[in-house]
Image (cartoon, rainbow, N blue to C red; front, side, top):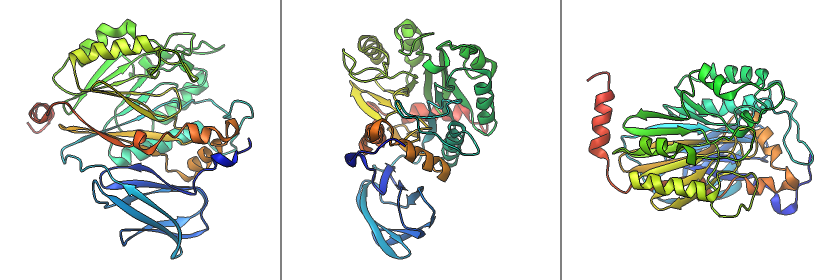
Length: 391
């Protein structure tokens, strides 16, 4: 394993995700025993500790700061606190995203490869855990934001089929740069996705409970960077609606004119021109990308632009979105399967331990609430009523 710098050690107990009434607690190193959490004098049983793990704290008060004592066999082992998000609307829609699955990858790291020897390949194990968690959370749609495979080879697409077989909710998917680099023996990713009825067009739309979901192919065959300007008219037509819209791409939109970190995404002028054009058609836009394997959030005008990291390396996550007539809430959670947590914790040591600090982002960039610029209650209620099978 690569060396870990003293300044990059991970906390033994961490509040990784927050919602209005819940929080995800994760841990790396705790003594074995029965784990409980004391939240404002209310005890919650979190089960037995056997190495790295994750658990939800529930019944929290919205919009407040609450202290958490973590106990093993009744003894306080760690202390932390959590600031919950404001209360969400009772009428809301949940969707989830994952990206950078990299089916076919056998090791992680730039200089010294960190390898796993589990019974199932770690990319599949982590992706399956993320999907199970998202479905249990209540997601009605799963959006896969590219880099499904490592080299787009037949056996990697077969692994994708194994993954799809266990997902009981509708799926949208787009390719990533790893899917289109054209390695020896690779398959055409567009054909493979279309054959699975997941990618009918470079700009694909889906309406769910009155919200517009737009998936955009940002790949450039044979290259790792992305481009979106060629689809500007199609994307603008897709978001030119009287309802909030979410736009999903594989490549992130670079925030500066000169790139300052790897990998390259959608260049600044290309991405900024697109966002500005779309905001003229719809002020309520939310963008979500993968590619960077990190978690970040920024704002551009009334739009929110986010990056969500990979399922299969530290911290190993999926993102959930709660959409309502007043706004949207993002929550990025770690995969909860203990074997997947154990693996992703190991990968924090990549790049001399720097990866463990670079990739997670800050809590407020992972979990946050955003209000729409205008209320959509009546529009969304009409859309939901029209779509209801009982009407």
